Length: 166
Image (cartoon, rainbow, N blue to C red; front, side):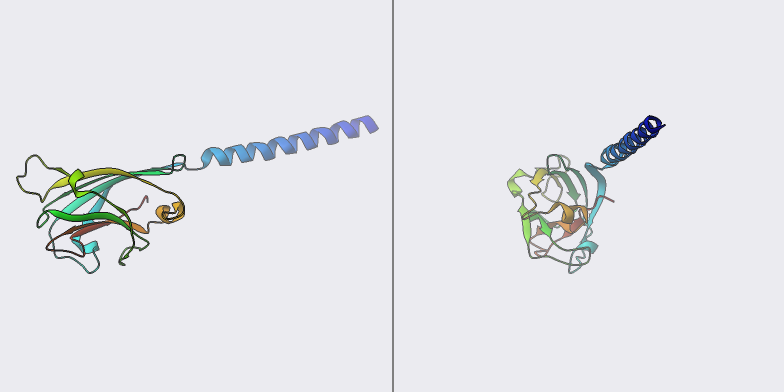
């Protein structure tokens, strides 16, 4: 009888450990590691203060926790002139501006639209390292960084788009 009780207790403990370890594995499998958002709008209405520009843009972003790299593609058209500045700012939620520029883009790397003869249309592709010092993963995933495109006519920004994954 004593042997039966010890065997039952041993099976109960082993079964409990199996259940606990399998829950941990399930939680790990369900953890999101890649984030993607396409078609994020860039408009003058998002700039602080609001820009009256009719220009529009879109942004596609991809972030993976494994590499801690944010990859982005930004497209725009209808700007009042050539891009004088382009960058990622933060920390600031929608409706607020940030003086902190966490990444600047070289305007010489802009690819102009083939069908437009002026500089009001273009694309920029790049990456940004999320180092958890200057750019923190929690802040990126909470949507407090934004892209701002400036022109001579709109030095504070002609169009802007918040980097969000939801």
